[in-house]
Length: 612
Image 1 (cartoon, rainbow, N blue to C red):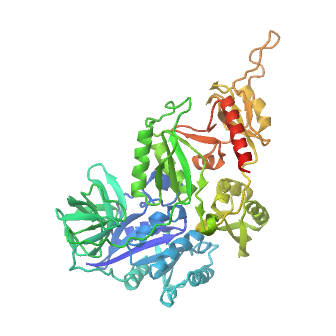
Image 2 (image 1 turned 135 degrees about the vertical axis):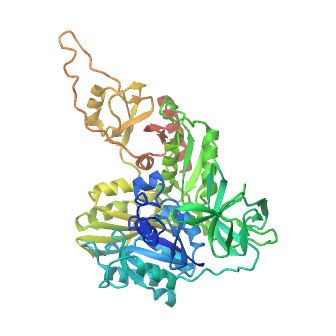
């Protein structure tokens, strides 16, 4: 059977997963009466909740005797490690772009990788049925983007399709009949080349994704570059340095059929398959016949740009909030397991006991990892994210830089420019994008974006869109203002009292509710002034013989400010921590005892003065 391997790349929320749903239905991979969840490829709970693709997934459909192996790739740059690996498996890409928004920075990131590999994209302008669509403008923007990215003449001659994935149709022209996805299927078969492979050579396959199965063990997915393989064949795994890692017998071969992974007896060059039976081999290793000695070239993965400290929960309430995985050994094993399958994450042991340094691409990627662990029953203490600096020529300090694209209503452009300027952003471009909106492009340090997302949504009343893309390392931009407000810190342990919280509200926003458990050193709110303030949230109303005991108890509290895990991580300062557990997310000081905290702060001040 003929094969076509392609990836669908798009920005977050441009309709990529919905498009794959339609391709599955219209190709017959899913029966008309079969019960299938909406956004079937977003199989994880977090993916469904957030509406994003986090892990790359493979599927396949058959169309007129041709099997199309389709990869649904992440759209967020924080999961770029997934994208870079997946592109090595495919021979073509469908670039999906929203008919109103046009190409966004994440689109630019993945497209740049695809063009560099020589892949020829098919442009699919989605959501052309929406009233604010402007497909001609989008096509011009994509062409300009390709030119800016150094596309070849062949890549610039890209076919264009218009579609509504939600309505289930694609068309070669805006005036063509809007019926089915048949034009897209046909264009893929005609435009994407068949995989180049050596069917007669020794079996060679590059592992690109790794997962574990309770019955089959480690499962490696990748593309076969040469030869054939059968179940029970003896194969070996070669590392990137050419050293043999292990030699085993393959216990299972799996191929993607619709939404299922079905066992097969054999596979041939060009196909995308999954294999089981290997104990040690991992992502980027070459799985091959025993006679092969040279590994396949694997794509370099961009290095992590941000890290944070993850440690055991050593707070007074540890183990009382639904967690059952509390020890440093359990946390370390889980983090190492994550790093094994996700090459964009690096784990190192910290100098502190039971603590680990977790490095990744950005706040979102690290936040998703911690949220996943929280749901698995882990309790953790997490430090603030910090960027990873490098040393350049002549000892110059370099820091990660990002291109930031902001789409805001015209009324809010001034406040966004002002706030980002404070965070060392340099404006590159500012132009009206139609519909009363302005598009602004900045170059700025990655650390300037830590904690800015929630502030941005507040400044733009939830209407702004901020996209970012890592562009490389640049000269250090100097110190940056941190959080201006101090913290309200509990000086007692027990259950918070409504009367005490009511009196504390004038000091600043409160993070907890009456009846919540608090302890010494826990952050219960934000102090309006710049310094920290220790308070007593357990203090009740003093009663006398002249006042009925029920009088004045019915105080009305302002709704507390509840933070998500990512907001909490972005909020904390260097001397603060986030306590993560399955049921509760708390903020606290790294040192709980107030006297020790003062001694530590004096010591740090003396060290800074000496360094100056």
